[in-house]
Length: 162
Image (cartoon, rainbow, N blue to C red; front, side):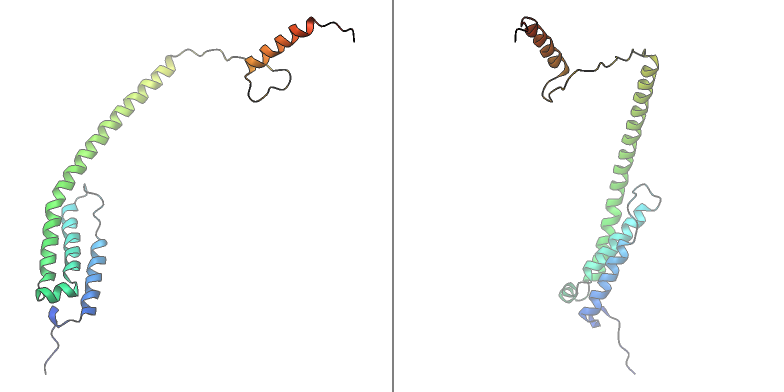
């Protein structure tokens, strides 16, 4: 009895699309967020292989290439992942060193500020005085006091004949 073959060419476009989606979703589950992790290069290669396979399983590409686009996509994706991972690891190491130097500098500045605060004398707190009358919102306290003095001078020359 003849059996159905599992050749990529014998699959329908709907089956290829489903496998493509599964490969794409599976590759997104691989954690490549931390370039300094132990297995980053392997994870990057696996993720890129899955993405390449997902692209290669496109039914139009499969038909145009005679079924070779899936393995080609997987190989090219894996090669891309394994070639770009070392560069990303190096960039992450440089960034980590930069952050360490900034943290060291920040700690030194905070220590210096705390030392200056300990050495600085405490100044006396200035007492606030009350202002008589209503101060308009567009006048400062000094302007208000000056107006009160001018008003007192002007009123001192007026006699109360009325």
